[in-house]
Length: 289
Image 1 (cartoon, helix red, strand yellow):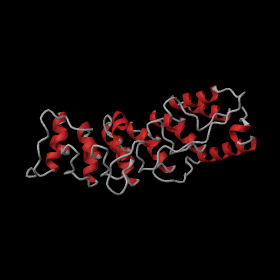
Image 2 (cartoon, one colour):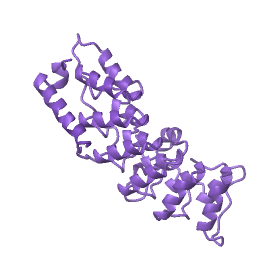
Image 3 (cartoon, helix red, strand yellow):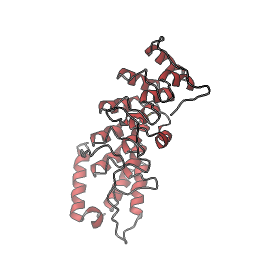
Image 4 (cartoon, helix red, strand yellow):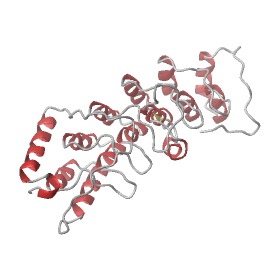
């Protein structure tokens, strides 16, 4: 199936792109993209499908990416589907593949030079999506391709220097909180489940373990709130500040106690001296997110 000239920059350009992509795929590698700062919502080139081009080809690409259909994804690309095409939530095919843990699709899209930095309508990047769901292979491929480990969501983040990282992305309820509380990828990885391997990968890539969201929560605080003992262990081992408190004055131990995470409470009690003073949160407070 031939490529659309206007979509591929001409037939020759399309053939060159496919040849280059196949070389990367054959080498089990992804091309490294150049980082251009911390923004997660970079404008993509306008879609350039001609009026007579079947718009369904972009839908086929997005559908294949979301369902891990690498063969269908390649067919859509060869038919002229655009890497910059987005769904109603502003997600590109790379974002949809990363969210679903479809590593083969992620590799193919990166080989075809899909923008690793492009965020959706909420400012989430593919790296955040992969970290949120604990898809380690996707996280690694995106990092190799140059994904920004210091990216923040669209509505910003309160953080110490240096800038926060995608390490927040593995924390519990991160997707919901991301929309309201400006979390980083490391928040996502720390609080959405037992994603310690993703947390390790993000830390290895330089993620800031003391990054704070709008309510002053660090990845450790989010892990404690979510009851993720393995993530807590990884963060503590990496030197996370166990005395850190959020804007409500709560530390990790208090958040774990409030949520009834007994194993995390025992873990944090062993890490935090009993003599350390802890102001009690306001009566009836469940803590900030």
